[in-house]
Length: 372
Image (tube, rainbow, N blue to C red; front, side):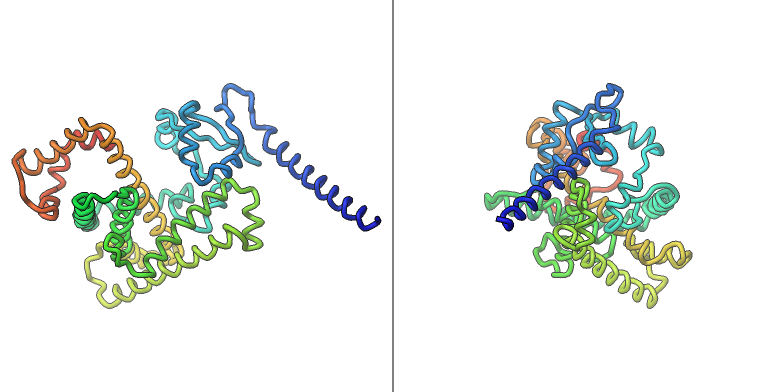
């Protein structure tokens, strides 16, 4: 009897402890957040609601945004604002950008992976990287190299799509665009070929890209998981996976950096085309400010900036073209008119793409409008 009483007492105490913890969390979440203040964006639950929609998060957020273009989700210490309103986006990212710092909260969540890269920092470090990147991207060598890389991979992408279409196979556009963007950005950023679209990428490169995608998913989960710090301390669950993926990412990047350093030491006067080589050359001027760790962060953030954004933009662009065939015809006709003068052209994909120059692209106003 005493044994059963002890068991029931332990269960009661556990439930009481759990109730107290939940009560504290609820009080901390819902107090001091101006829930009923009409001058604030309307509240739509807590960030922890996203845990129930994690596998289809963007679909869920899209449905919410249809009724509430701007809304708040509450967390323990603050509110998070979500918006699809173009006016709010311009206000935050352009006209009042300096007033919207990333905050220590954000930096603490992402710094394990993003380090001190441009996506994770504010102030002087952000301005330094912005200035350095702007200068490098304005150089003729890098612009020409980037154009040649994207032109080559565009030809490979069109060839792959054409072959699938000719054989009446289903085309997974998002996967193909992601591989094309990954291959292009890796070449421009690191000066290496991952050969994603040839299905012959080396195991190390494939492991790196998978680790990068999985690590970013783990970071995203941190915004919704109130116990992520405890899980990191105990090295369990998603935090254990994140730690392993960061190790894979760091090994890959540092191996490339060491290889590039050796090549630059052998031939320092060689024209530096990729971003990593150019930053390595820049780091020699100020080795204390641009360390290997800092350079790793800069390059990784560049890769993150270009890979997913390019692929997703292309994916949505072609989806919208398929939904609007009249616009699709106008875009295609404008490309043909500017490349071939409106005449029939039997050139293959590589030759056709090779004729596309900066001058011809500047004439494609309808294409530019459709993309933006």
